[in-house]
Image 1 (cartoon, rainbow, N blue to C red):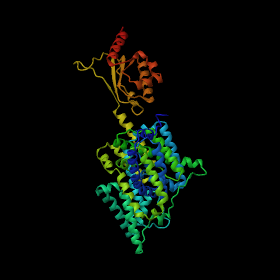
Image 2: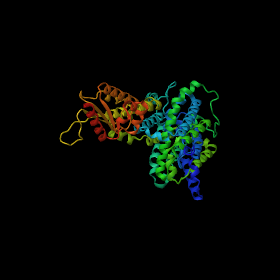
Image 3: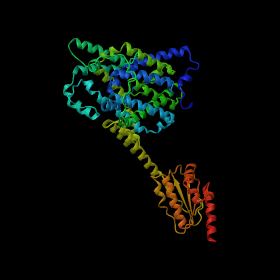
Image 4: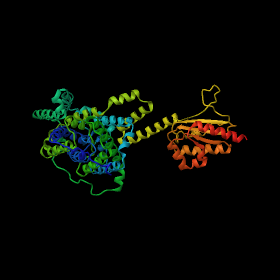
Amino acid sequence: MKNIFRPKIIDSLKGYSGKMLVSDLVAGVIVAIIALPLSIALAIASGVPPVMGICTAIIAGFVISLLGGSRVNISGPTAAFATIVAGIVAQFGVQGLVLATFMAGILLVFMGLFRFGSLIKYIPITITTGFTSGVAVTIVIGQLKDFFGLTFAEGTHAVETTEKVVAAVRSFTTVNLWALLVGAVGLAVLIVWPMLGKVGKKIPGSLIAVIVGALLVMLLGHFGIEVATIGSTFGALKGSFDAFNFPKAIDLDLIFALLPSAFTIAVLAAIESLLSCVVSDGMIGDRHNSNTELIAQGLGNVCSGLFGGIPATGAIARTAANVKNGGRSPISGMVHAAVLFAVLFLLMPYASLIPMPIIAAILFMVAYNMSEWRSFVKLCRTAPVADIVVLVVTFVFTVVFDLVVAIAVGMVLAVVFFMKRMADNAKIRAWQRSEDGRFKHLPERVAVFEIDGPMFFASAEKFSDLPIEEDCRVLILRMHNVPALDATATKNLFSVQKICREKKISLLLAHVNDQPLSVMKRAGFVGEVGEENFLPNIDIALRRAEELCQGSSK
């Protein structure tokens, strides 16, 4: 347990100095300023009240920093969850989301306890890039209404991404040009502000966009021009927690219905948090504990659900900002949460003034930054056709359906294509006799078949058609290039042994690697063939074959 769960704060506080504390305090405050508008925007994109985004950044951010396996990882709501959270809320309500978040947290804890941290790397980049790009597109589509100030017809059902596209197209004649102006100004600020040297790097553009947008809407209001704000859309915001906001009655059917979504949340949280840790490791020259991080992410999500939050995970952009501004221990992440806590109770009413087109503009930038379009284009240009299919299918299914379906279909396709690739590369070739001395001498009435590649159910049938000559007395299977063997291939080896026994042919196996040999022993194949017929290399096998041939001719 010690190696599985050891929070980084334990090691970080050894030799901790006042200078380091000041750096962590500064970094924590700056990250909180960055996280404030993002947390509000991501909550709105997820279909929940803005305060839930800030509660998530506070509760999950504090717990994960305190217990996590990284020195500098900053956690909170992220864009990757927006689509799936919105779908849960639409189908099961906020209480269903709380339960799904809680369940995802439990799954993450178990993933850490069972050392699944190292297994996340086996998810192909085509799937992560596909669903990340797909989520970016869904975020953009989801914000078209607010950015253009559209008015959907009464009774419009726009929950799925495709429904939102249809509703936006049908309602495009209702564009509010003043809302579009506010959104365009906000988008321009977000694009230009980072280019303004040190000031642009120290103060987040999203905060400036919020201030400029709020002032512009107030100015327009003096002329009787209305633009939707958070307050007019969601009502007045209050600074408080919904403590222990757990469903009072839990339906077993609801748990089963939410399980796929909870699993998807857990996988996404694991992938994104560990990716964030890897990025930050490279920035500070440290090494995170992946299993500790997963346990902390799980506990953070459990607490987030209990206190009225939404799913959380490591946020790469906020983590990078933490490092760049001097954060070097979990203290900075805890300070970030504490600052947001103060903001929640002191300044939350002012958040009602934030214009909805500004929130849409912020989310457009979030979508652009997370879209990985360059990686998407590069994969389409350079990857094998099978990988491109997985990439595109995952992307399309994320946009058209949801992440649960997209990841499931993507993984199935990736596995199928991988098995086909391995099966195609697995070959069995017969040695040819040579009289010019270029190859090893192959005795008469001896056949050697060289097996290359893993032998598993997709390639096992290649054992079925070994071209054994009628006068053959010894069959050698050379297996030094077989790294793995499964039960189906082992069954086919039994068939080869049966044919050899019927034809009075001695079967020898040369240079069998550890994994295949272990499988053969457990299946009883070694006992069937005889341990003496398993030889360490082909030279010894050829000599034994020659002896067997000479013995049979006497």
